Image (cartoon, rainbow, N blue to C red; front, side):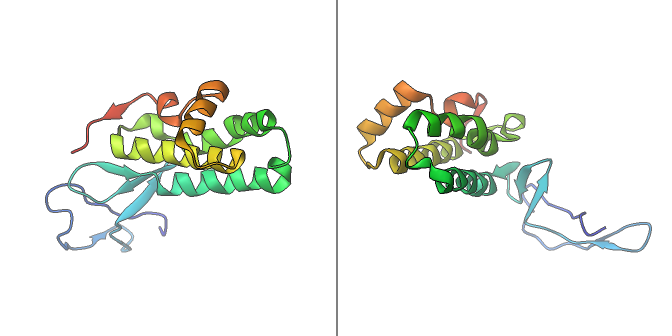
Length: 149
């Protein structure tokens, strides 16, 4: 039962409570974060998720593409690989939850950093032009948006 744990959400999420014991006598630990079907749920006052692990996996897959000659390959080829292999990693499972606008901005920032590295620039107007001509932002691909609490 090492894969099972408990997570509290609500006004008393940070209050210590007794461990839950299974019928076999094992105790379930309390966690501050857990992964369920690829979505990382976090302990908080309101039901919430984190995209930190998604961003790490996204950059890991982007670096794998760059490591295989992505910076010397044509930009169109690299972007096609990113859209087919990396963007799904970044957005995996997020359609099942409502992300706050702050997390949507983090998704876009991750994609912007990729474009900055690919086109060797930090000028945001150039990055916006690249997004217009080569594709779109992840927050536009990802539809559900929730208001910040």
